[in-house]
Image (cartoon, rainbow, N blue to C red; front, side, top):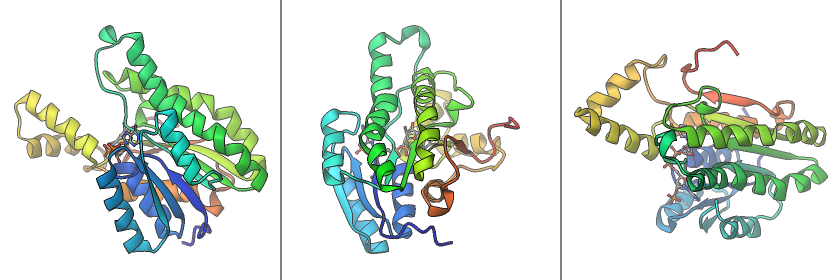
Length: 259
Ligand code: NAP
């Protein structure tokens, strides 16, 4: 399917690995030129080269922390008027609600709520003037089904979802959409790290722990970054101009509710 976005330009945040990379690859496959960001320069450059070699699109790298003002300024300086913005960053740490201080909450809100809001504010009005824009917030299945021990993530991501809900309904009149994509378990470094520490705590070999855990899920496996990226790319397509303000679960059927 031709997504009708060849030649468009996207900022994809936190995209040297994992879900951000999957999304960058899927957009590049449809001919979108990219600005990709991450903190670590080496992996970022390697990912950029991989995308250029595979898809022949222009890829600019910005090494920096997208949750900082400086990091955002650098990304926007590289592409001040993007057609597509994909918000993403590392997630807050797990922990016990009882022990979180306000500083922990401030950091989580800064990274997973305020940083995307700042990037949306900086780009959405230009998109509306130009008559095309697609904004994706990579959040978490925890927005629909909060996860114990991930309260920092639950709160910040739900806050972002609420903060842009009304704006998404105003922007669509100008062919600008804002949607949230909610990953369940995907096979990324982050999830591998989480699984490894859980396996260690349980005293079980990593492979056994993962096999048992995924066997419990409807799909019987984790999602791939390519599957996740393809869902995001569709929401960025020309054809998706009538979809806005939605929270799309990409979780292999894990969420059990009807709606
Ligand atoms: P990942 O495999 O660890 O990849 C994270 C990517 O983001 C890397 O490229 C990393 O590069 C970059 N990054 C992290 N913090 C950044 C920052 N402050 N500024 C710029 N770049 C940054 O993680 P992932 O699994 O793709 O997860 C992405 C997001 O989805 C996270 O918020 C995670 O909590 C959420 N999520 C993931 C899953 C899942 O199953 N994978 C499920 C639910 C929610 P550097 O480290 O070099 O910066």
